[in-house]
Image (cartoon, rainbow, N blue to C red; front, side):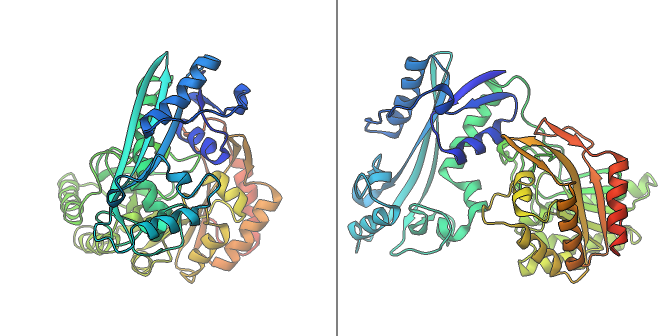
Length: 453
């Protein structure tokens, strides 16, 4: 297996990048190669600083390496803080100190234009490659929002009426300068470095099928995400569509009108072929409720179903992260099968298996979102055990099943679907739970008065 050094000892960054690249390339930290010395950053540009770090590692340790550097550039300040972004208010300044200084320096300025920029440098086989991510916006007059870090509360990206700190992690991770640069890096590693393909997007059209689902019967699928990329609020170790890091693709989200027209065309084609349909399933390359027109599209699908296939059920497979949004919740109540994911009722395990983008997301929040449907839902639990990024997980233990049963009792679903992996997964070291084990767990759930499908 090929190895590459990430010039950091930041454990969060390491875990994230290891998850992105998977098992095809081994990502090493500075500590892994015995580098405990200060790496110089004396450049006057982000390009120079990130290049300086990787060149230091390559020359000193003879290793392929990548590193990043990020800056905020404010037009009214002549591009400051720029390369001094992290230390704008001084070597030992806090983020609040930096923001306070920035706001004081541009107080009263009419020109609030600014942009964030990240540069990632990688040295491979002696050659330097660089990737840039940039997002333009403006500096607000005061802090707005509580999420994020650094300058997020005072940076409002173009095209949005909220700051990074208001938009939340999911949106920021799709549009930010760092996300753009990271996607370019991952694409390069995929093309030039990894041993095998990283991409595993399953669905390359908005309407797909009909296909036979092991749990839902003959199903016509609706993919509200890109045809050539993945967009999801979870990054599950077992996701059949692969890691989120493959990027959101180039096709964008399908419009409401496109979904309706393509579904109608497929209905007419199935009628001509005399094909039977059991269910219409919102699934695809990520989380369907992320689509801004999700609720309206659900209404369109129900109307078309009523006209062309009135006996078919409409199902939505969701991870419930956005089920607390009123328009999403109301739409999920209108479908026949509101199928919500709950793989663990213990936060530590949920975070290892489902890897939510929002670091604040907990099992308790997932249960609360499901419980709000007052029984008008089906819970889907995938059982597995394995290891990823040095962390072991097993949601079949007595403690895990007891916690799940307690959660099911609180949620009071119509029923529970228990199953295990049966396709290739992005994390390679996952263990499929046997049918006998699933049957034993199902018996425990049934004994607790909960229906198992």
